[in-house]
Amino acid sequence: MFFGAHLSSSGGIHKAVERAVDIGADAVQIFVQSPRAWRPTAHPAENVAKFRELKEAKLQGAVAHAIYLINVASDDPELWEKSATALDHTMRIGAELGLDAVIFHPGSHKGAEGGAASVADRIARACLRAIEAGGDDAPWLLLENAAGTGGTVGRNAEELALLVDAADEHPKLGVCLDSCHWYASGVDVTDTSAIDAELDVLDQAIGLDRLRAIHLNDSKMPLGSNKDRHDNIGEGLMGEELGHFVGHPKFQGLGAYLEVAGAGDGPRAEDITAARELHARWSR
Image (cartoon, rainbow, N blue to C red; front, side):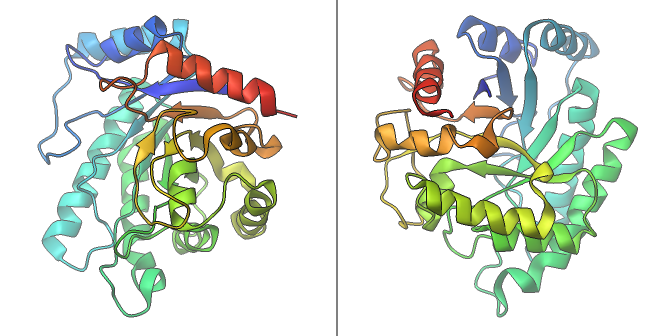
């Protein structure tokens, strides 16, 4: 397992790689535009080239997280199109940067009758379009599990598998599992048997070869709260027991990306160290 962090690209997208190296991370996760705005960012060609050069020389992995506004589960045609366009853009930039994957939240069905099943085709259509937008060098597109708030889609292994199936099991469509989101949705990631049960469902439905990354976050909120509130490694309610997740044998070899606040400005060197030490104590 290697350890990365979600870091700012302020000052140029290549700066995120420099920041990852500075804190001792093995990998980096970025936004390719403001996460709370529709308007895409134009990245100068020299910054894109520098990102690729630094990434290939210094890191084991690099991924992007798509913007939070995306909801390709929506039945509003305008919102769906804006969401799909934003996802297309992220995949195109991901291909230019040579990223391993783009990770995104599928969105919410807003209480629609039939739940996730009723919107799976909409989500699948956006996924297939985005992968095509990435072209021959398209990174993997990863569906992230949801914390379960307000009709969000992908809260468990069954729903994630449903979406992959709806997209005809495209070979570049996969999954990213977030420890905090799983915990919030009711999957006790401090219990190896609970993790095993969810992974068995995922494996039987779509195969664990589609599991391409994990998000490693502690939680400020209790099990089953449906509230997505990340905490620093070892400082949240999971504490040492988060080791059941990071040390799980089926996650080894993957990139574990931290999305924690640190001291308020994002992951620090001590957060990467805490993650590595937790892994060392629990891996088997």
